[in-house]
Length: 52
Image (cartoon, rainbow, N blue to C red; front, side, top):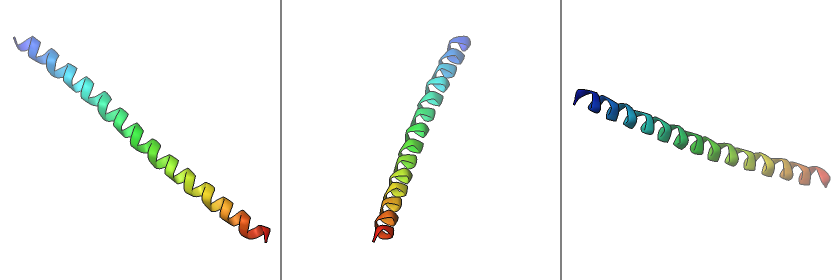
């Protein structure tokens, strides 16, 4: 009984750890993408101003 409980707890911890890791990777990806889009917009705006 005790061993089964330990196996279940370890399995839940593993699944929870993977879920947290994937969630963190998704959040960081969205932040990087937003930052890159702002950078591209800034570069384009500077290029348009310099062209005049």
